[in-house]
Length: 245
Image 1 (cartoon, rainbow, N blue to C red):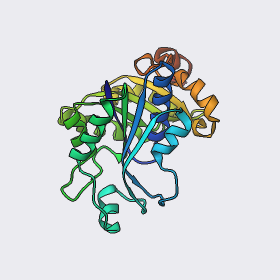
Image 2 (spheres, one colour):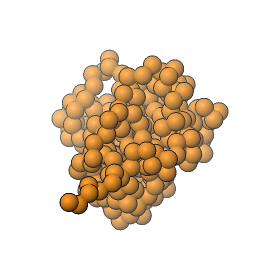
Image 3 (cartoon, one colour):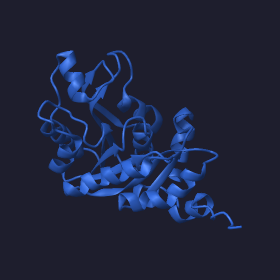
Image 4 (cartoon, one colour):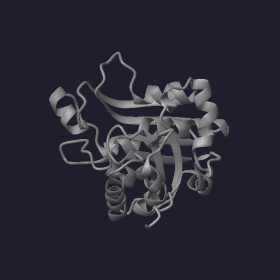
């Protein structure tokens, strides 16, 4: 019964869509899947959150949210300003463990990046992952600036003795530029872990039926897909250097 924690190099990098793709690939293998969002920020009580979006895209998953705060802020700040209880790592770990007892795969999607604070003690998603002894997936953007953020996040994981299972590119453009193409080779080096997938930039706009069918094409076999990192690199990877005149 696997528990995987999904984090990112920052906010708006594609964590929810990546979580949905992993969930869809797992479901296609006949596995039962739960998605846990410890702290949902920036949505009203009546709006669907990230866990609901994963369920919409991926299919029959158990979607669980531990806390919801209306302002789009870090969980600790959002909790303090709302006057509502914060969510600590022990609560996250307990909820994930309970879900793992009755599901084959549990995906825990964090808020923002790895070290965003969840409570006034300064607890982070990394603390919850450590309690769970869970592997982590790192979602990163493809473009300029991603290598530093990826390297810093991976370094923080290693310092806490957490395992980075690999990197997923959260949004891959139909017409990638020079930085994006170079980063196909450079991202796994920065992370010190393999590239495990690349999601097209339009993935969230696909119909759920198309999304579920295509998800395996975006993810490596380690995540239940058929995506080939070497083949992807040959098509999109590091371009030739310009000729020297």
